[in-house]
Length: 94
Image 1 (cartoon, one colour):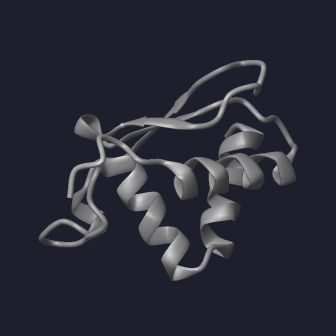
Image 2 (cartoon, rainbow, N blue to C red; image 1 turned 90 degrees about the vertical axis):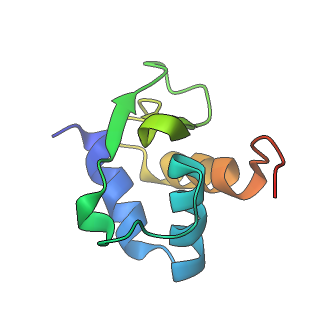
């Protein structure tokens, strides 16, 4: 397991329910779990920028979260993931 992915799941575990909902919307395009629950949803974490200079992004059609390699830096990962999910606008569709 990559240290960055381990830190991502640590971040998710420590996140508030509101943050988890926003992360779900960021990664999947929906703030609700699919029928049958989250265990029935495919979710992929894909390595992004190997230098860790970019914010995370996603491919909502494929439930893929693009995570830059922040290495062991949990604080940077936390800041960047929070910024990405809090400030994302997507297509602005309601």
